Amino acid sequence: MNLLKLPLLNKNIISIDIGSYEVKIIEAKKRNNLIHVNKAFSVLTPEGSYEDGYIKNEKILSKVIRDEIKKNRITSRTAYLTIKSTDIITREIQLPLVEPKEISGMLKFQLTEYLPMDISRYEVQYKIIGRVYNREKGKHNVLIVAIPKDIVEKHYFLLTGLKLKPEVLDYQSNSISKLIRFSNIINEDVFILGKTIVAIDLGFNNTNVSIIKDGKLQMSRTIEIGGEILDKNILNLFNFTKEELVEKKLNIEDVSRIIGNYSDYNRLINVTKNTFESIIKKLENIIKYYISKDIENEINMILLYGGLSQISGVDKLLSNYFNIETTVLNNLNKISIQANPNKYFNCISTLIRDEEV
Image 1 (cartoon, rainbow, N blue to C red):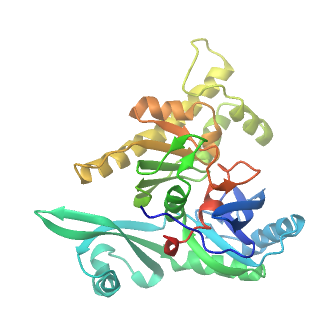
Image 2 (image 1 turned 60 degrees about the horizontal axis):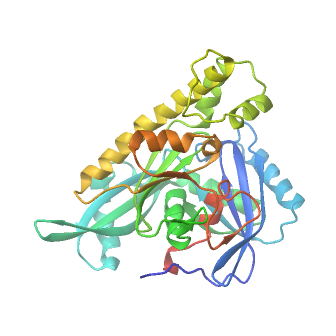
Image 3 (image 1 turned 180 degrees about the horizontal axis):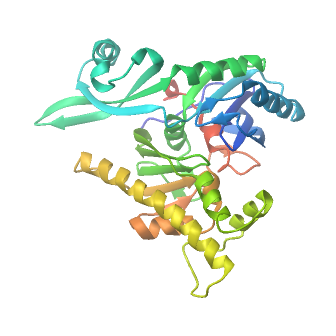
């Protein structure tokens, strides 16, 4: 069995997750093959400064992050960053069983066959995620990730402008797969090692879906529905302030259950449930596609995290629909953190590197 190990982190590292709704930051250090998160904090993303992975106003965004780092007395300069965007393209392809070092050369000449676009505008990375067999002929199963250079460059300049030293830029689905491999028990007693998991980040702009088998990323897709759509749907029915909107969502007792009487509470439940069902329908297509790719493919668990996962009963909605064990992330073994790990899942996962297997 390969065990994922952390590098010797003899200094604190800052890990940053920038979203359209919030910027989340942790400062962490490794001790005895555990991740110790010393500080974890967040700040609302300034309106109009960040959208779907793109920095729209670097000056305003930079000031907010700089102020929070100063306020929380962060002294480390080494920075890791995790990103996601609907413009990040992923493809699963099959290549001959050559030595791994030869794959780079093959892709150099064949990449446009798999990604028919202007490759010069993207940073392209790949990872071998397994093998497939067709008529006893084996091939590498390779995941390709193409990130717009504009996203990469602007995040780099943001960090250097903050006087930070950017060492790692990671794609969220890739980060999550490594954390699941490293922290193989969640919520005290739920074992995830060896399972095929659909990890779902119920974010503000969109919903990020990662299918992970034996700790290895198999598929990554984005559903363009998230908390922002839910907020708009609710505000079409109710005249809530921002503070009231947050409170009303957190006070939902069980979004999977609607009592028969007509009331404002039931109207709130109904619109929330309908929004989740829109996500579920698109998720169903992703799961069906994955299962159809190989007769042995199956899903053992659905893991929920991100802002919308905090709405009570969302796990029941998915469990009832798919008849698959569904759980909301509450904690992970090998991770020491005082804050809610669900919120900082992406920040924590970015600390783990591929070469540490």
